[in-house]
Amino acid sequence: MLIACTDNLTGFSEVIQATFPQTEVQKCIVHQIRNSIRFVGYKDLKAITADLEPIIRLLRKN
Image (cartoon, rainbow, N blue to C red; front, side, top):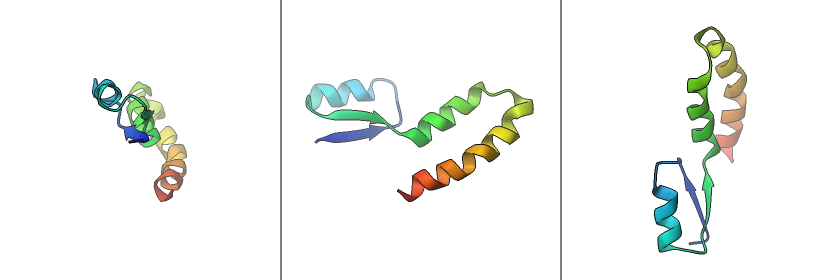
C-alpha cells in the first residue's frame, strides 16, 4: 500500500504504519474541516459553513 487516507480515527494511522511501514498516511481534508467546525462559536457557525460549502464540494469532485 502506497498511500492511505484516513479520517484521523485514534490509532488508525499507527496501525497502518505498523502493518505497512512504507505507506504514506494522509488525513482526509473533508474530515479535518468537519472536525474543526466544532471549535466555531454558534453565532459564526452559519457563515463559516456557508463559506466552506463550495470548498468541500470541489474536494468531493476530485
